[in-house]
Length: 120
Length: 108
Image (cartoon, rainbow over all chains, first blue to last red; front, side, top):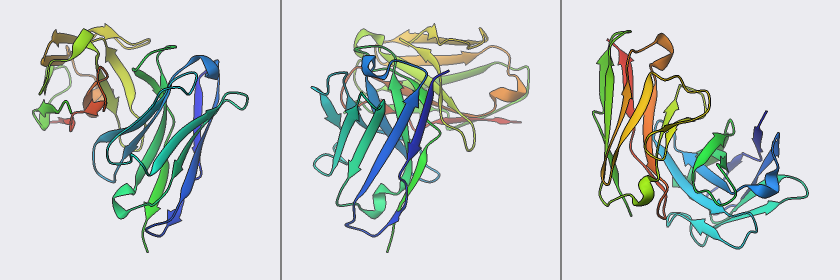
């Protein structure tokens, strides 16, 4: 069974930093693309970042470009999101999401999500 | 950015009725790289349909997707109690991947 478990969410002040982790199991992590998607309270889904299998291609939404960095550790089957210069509008539930295949842009599995709150 | 607009915002129906949800893209979606997700309160989204019309693993055949180019539809042939939820469309052909704003299917 595929499992994606996010951790690292917290209450941080504006301008602060946070690193989210997504620990995975039940599939060969190194063979799949991965994503981060967020959902502000009461709002819809917003894709924010993608990483391919080799970490060669990393894509970001304009809203986080230059502030957030996606990375992966295949030995630990873990996905990361380093978030810097956080703003109030970054407050959201952050979902780790698995790609459908080796080069796929489709998301087929989601973690349960972790709340990040940016507030003074 | 390919903006996706879902309609209606809310669909009020009774169990057993047919639901038809629409999603219009501002630009043509290449390769029909188009998906539908279901989200229930407090839960993560679940993939229902991908490549515009392919049901994901384990999805009942009452769910079907159609469309191409800029216009896509999700149909639920006979609503079951567990189908009342919010549905999102998404295109994954371009960057940024974009989602629609969601359609809530509620009990009439």
